[in-house]
Amino acid sequence: MNIQAVYHTRTGHSRKIAGAIARALGLEAKDIKDWPEDGQADLLFIVGGIYGGRSDTKLLNFISRLKPGSVARAVLITSCASGKDGQAQVRQALEGQGVPVGKREFICPGNFLFFRRGRPNQKDLADAADFALRVAGKA
Image 1: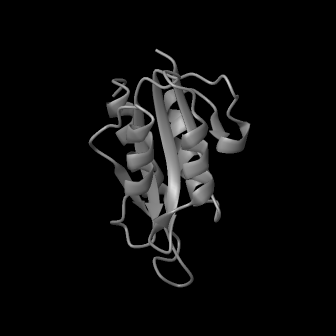
Image 2: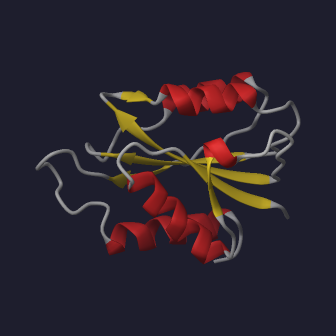
C-alpha cells in the first residue's frame, strides 16, 4: 500500500506532527509544496492547522490541485489551539474532488501565544503516531 503524509504549517506544529507520523510509518513527510504534480497515494495523511477558526487557504489550494483518482483515501490530522476544531473545509474540498475521507480525524492540541503553551508535546506526537498506525492497519 502506498502511504504518504503531507503537511502545511505556519507555526511548525503540523510539521512536527507529520514528522512523528512519518517516523512511525517508516516514510518521509512532505510539505504540500513538495508534493509532485503526479503524486499518488492509496492512503494520504493530511496534516494542517486551524488558524482563526479556518483551514489555511494554501492547504485548500493544494486539495484543489489533486488529480482525479490520485488519492484513494485521505485521513485528516489537525493542529488546533482549541483542541476541538477540525478541518471541515479540507474535508469538504476533498469530498468535492471525489476523495473519500476517513470519518475519524485526529485533533492535536496546538498553542497560540500563551494558551496551551508547549503543545504539541511528546505525548501529543505519540498519540498522533498511534492514530496513524491504527488507521494504516499497522498497530
